[in-house]
Length: 270
Image (cartoon, rainbow, N blue to C red; front, top):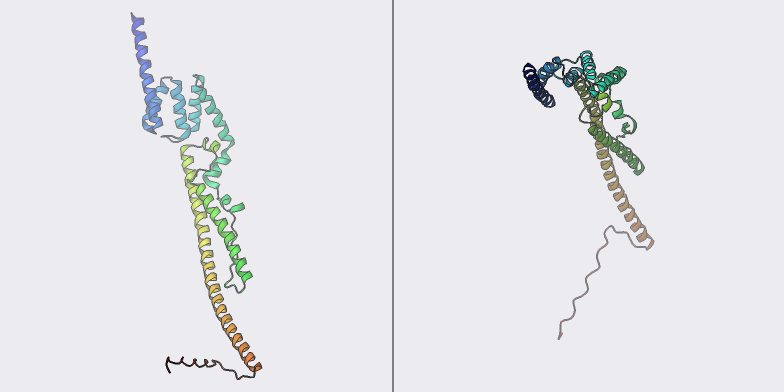
């Protein structure tokens, strides 16, 4: 009878553990970390291997608690001894992290955004003169400016593709980071992107203004040149007419009189 009572008690206890484990996993999935930590800690203390693995992940990644990878690794080892295959993978991940520390530091604090303004995104500012007085100079200036504008638009598109901050951190590095390190990387990248964008935008605004001033001055020069050309053309025409009159032996007149009108037709019957 005592054996039967003990067996029933163990069965009830196992069902309760299963319910607690399900609740703990649900809390972890919804990032209800205090509840998950409490349930996993209770189950881990009772010897549940899966709970030890999940609790190890919480400590390893710093989910709801300060990151403590040594404690996480110890829980992984206990879970692996209890038959949790994922725990062995987690221990290997810890070994990879030790090898990739420099990569983690690069993305969390050393990345400088140089790739955003290098290679095909290195947009050299063209030299814009104060004014252009020949068609060749106008064509060359516009060509250089349009090439820069194309490059700058590519830079903007590339910067937009890098958003949100942290998107370009390699996945195999993200896997090795704690939650706090991931947020640190995002904040660092956000500052770098903003700095690069502000600098490039200031340069672009200055160049656009310079190009606008050049265009205005060049158009004004061309307009005045066209007026002067028209005056010269009229003067040349007048000179040509003067020479033609002189050759014909007639006195030159600036505005020769119009010929008299023909006489009116006779009225009928007159």
